[in-house]
Image (cartoon, rainbow, N blue to C red):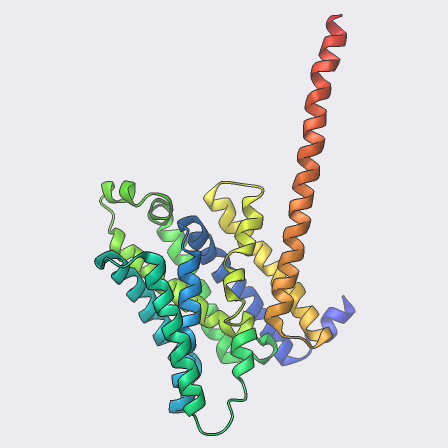
Length: 289
């Protein structure tokens, strides 16, 4: 506890802690929708497409995350629109956006005079460089995402598992899907500084996969995903601080360890439950005898 208090004396560590909390809330909730809707590949496409906005931001001398936000939102809506209107396959359209964003980012970064000093932090994450302004935006996003899932819980649930049923309930499916895709895009952009473009998709899938090991109920997966994401983010934060390694890699490493522990725990539990179930009939047989 003393070590924890000493670390939090530094302002950059306080920012990192709050960033981990708010990112865990946003990614935990949005990631549950992404996994339930089976659009993990789409979130990966949006993540890598946002790199184009980062490159343009560097080239124009503006905040790279602003450019990433524009690119991510447009790509999210674009993928949703073109896969619905065109004859191109879903995965092919995502691949086109994915490669286009990466290509644009690389081109503009190389066209930018001088050296892009913070590029690695966008690729692999650097939670220790998160500013107070970044934390504010993360907080606002977490509030917005939480409000969306609280106020529109049933519509989101229906759309995540059965759009046809949602349509029969006369819900504005298209509008809600677009809002959710925008939230996915914003969550991705504001999580880049924490986890990095390369590894971000893991924060949207691993906590939900762990939660799904123990429950199939949507609302429980939402809650458990946030808690698991936070546990991985905080432990990864301390790994990153003490070992001086990129925060994205350390957070994902922590989440993988949690997954292995959870998987092992469930396997042991099922094994013991199976043995106990086999013993009960034997005990009952002896009693009858």
